[in-house]
Length: 543
Image (cartoon, rainbow, N blue to C red):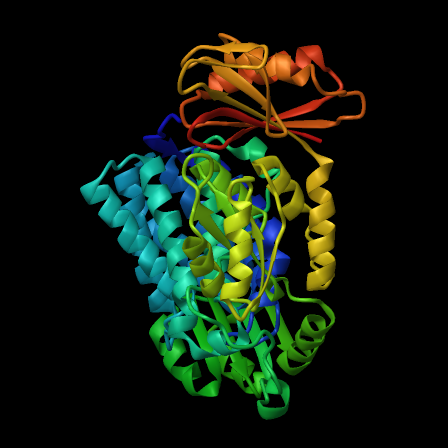
C-alpha cells in the first residue's frame, strides 16, 4: 500500500466526508451506547449532525489550503453542534484548526501537533472534565500520534494508523475509568463516535472508500467484564431536567465570565467559541433562568430545549424492546490484518490469530471466550483443523458456548453476515450453521514440496487450487489455477465473487485476477478486498 505523506485542504475535506459517511452507518449503534452524562440515546445522532454541518461549511471554504478548509470545518461544527458530544467534537475540530494554523499542506507531524491542540481545546471547553469519555480518547489519540511522528515514520498514513489504534484501545478502557459505563455494560458513546470518525478518515487515506460500502464500523468491545446491559431505574431516581443549547452572538464576549455566571445553573456546562460567537450547552432544571442570564451577554440563536426525562424514558424503552447486540459475543480465528478488519467490521468481538499451519490451541480459544463480555459465545474456527480444538472449549468454561463448524474464511464471513440481532442464541446458532453452506470457497496457495496426488503432478512452489477444501487444480500461474478451479463450479446462479488477496500478493495482481473473472463471468459482481493472509495468494468467496 502506498503511504500518503501529506494532504491539502481538499484531501482533508474528503477525509472527513468519508469519516462522516462512516459515522452515519454507526450512529444508531452509538446512540444505543449512550448512558453518560444522561442515558438519552442521542450521542451518535448529535455527532453525525455536527459533522454534517462541518462538512457543509468546508465546501464553502474560499480555497483548498489545509488551514482554510479546517478552519471552515471548525466554524461549521460550532454553528451546528448538537448535544454534549457534538459541542466537544466542535472543540476538537477547533483545536485541529488552531494546530494547523496557516499551513496549506499537512504532514503526519503536522497532524500529530494539531491533535495535541485538539485535545487541549476539548478539555478547556468542559467545565468539569470527566475521564473515561471522549476527552480521554482524544488525549490518548494525541499522545499516540505524537509518539508515531517522533519515533517512527511520520507520514500521514502512519500517524493516522497510530491514532486509530490508540482510539480503539482507549475506548475499550473507558468502562474501567467510568463506573456508570461498566454498570450499563457499554463503552463510552462519544469515544466510540470519535474512533469511528478517525477510522473512516483512515479508510480514505488508504484508498479503501469503495470497500467501505460493503462494511460496517465496529463497536469497540470493553477490555474488562461488564455487569449489566441496560441502566435500571435511572429515571425514577434522578430528575434530569432540560438539555438547553443555544448560540450566543455579541461583541467582546468573555467565555470565562459567561462560564462562571452559568456554572451553578446546571450540569454538563460547555461554553466554547470566541469573542463574537459562543456555543452554550447545559443541563438545567430551569432553562428560563439560564436564558435570562444569557441574554445579558448577547443575542440568542438556534435555541433548543429538550426534556431529558422524556428522552431517557424513550431510550430505556427502546433498549428494552431491542435485543442488545452485546448479548452474544462472536469469536473468530483469522490470519491477516485485512481479514481481521473484515471480521471486526462485521461485529466479531474477538479475533484469535491462526489458520493453516498456525492452528491456535484450545487454551488460546478458551482465553478469548473467557475475556468476552458475554456469557453466550459463538466460535467460528474458519478452518477444519481448528474445529476439534474449538469444540473442546465447551467443556472448559461455565459460559454457554457453541461452535459453528466453518471450514474457511468465506464460510465464516457468510455465517457472521447472517447473524440476526433480534434472534435468540439458539436461533442464531441454527441460522449461522445453515448460512455457512451458502458459499463456495476457493483457496489458491503454493506447494511446499514436490509430490504427486492422484492425477496431479506437483512441483515445489507451484500454485495449487482448492475448492471447498479439496485440491482440484495445479499450474504455473495463480490466476490460471484460479480459472481452473472456478471451472469446477456451476456459476449460473452465483451473484458475487469476493477476492481476499494475501500478504504476498499485490493489489495490481488481485485486480488482474478480478478482471479475468469478470471477463469470463460478466454476470458476477467481483469485489477485491485486502486480506493480508499468509500462505494463500487468494481466498475467494462465491455466493
